[in-house]
Length: 451
Image: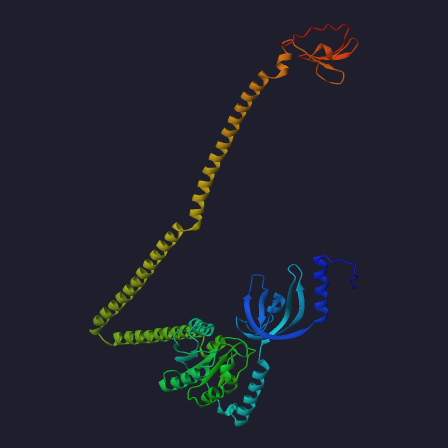
């Protein structure tokens, strides 16, 4: 409805009408600019300002939309957003409600990625026959990544869990920015020169196409192709692909997956060791039994050396008993240490501390109850004293001594004989009850005049 010359908007009506017009006119627009004043409150919503050299506009992106982003924007990033123009009615602020966001220039980067992929693919850098097999037994891994990123932490954590015996050489590099690709190239060449490791992991955590762009470098791709050491590419998340992934000998979906791929499961090794130990014990027992049979046979064939053999057999038995006793003593010592540790743990148990606090709380509760009872008793005594004082000065106490209060039929107190006349009805309030009286005679006393 259009406003006529006589209509007057309230501020709320004006802002509401302006919001409707903006949202209808600019229902879906794309805007490019630089992020500033980025705020991420605990609600999950994002608030920021999108600006260029000449102007700025406030933006809001709600949690349902921010959760869908594959990258984390930061202060100063150049981005392209899509959304609708709206108005925050409470303050009358013009703003952009953002429902999609991507880094500015992403389309150009994607085109460059496709062109380089086609070029290197045509040269055969991705062909399977050029890829090296991973070593069957790996003793040392060269990890080329940021020393402070999540990737190196994930790799070391997985290796420690699966097979801690594998040694790791970390070649620290930048994994983002203009110098990153050159540093990774240098580190790959250096790892080949050092010739200490059996295999190389090169990678980083996830991010936008701009964040991962250094792994799309042509020089880096050719360095990976010519590396004597096998290279596992572990860049980003499972859905991220870079040129390094295609040219590497093996592509791992994540840095953690690369560590899993290159490390055997120590539990399997323990099981194999247990089985081999069991088999060795069986073989030793069998050999010992065979030797005992041979000894018995030799004893039957010899007369004098039998005593010597019996001494050896006794010595063997004593050594066996000593070994058993030593094992028993060692087990007992471990049991005592375990008992002492359990006792110490029991002393430090939170339940003991809780019991102390419960006892203290019970004592304080008793004191509180006692104080409340004493306070109530004191208040009662003071109340009785005040009641006695009040009763002493009460008009009702005066009435109980034989006095009366006279009131007219309208309830007014009679203080002077001139207030009534003959025939009036009056009420007399005495100590217990009231009397209804009729004035039969009025006698006035002359008032003394002041001189």
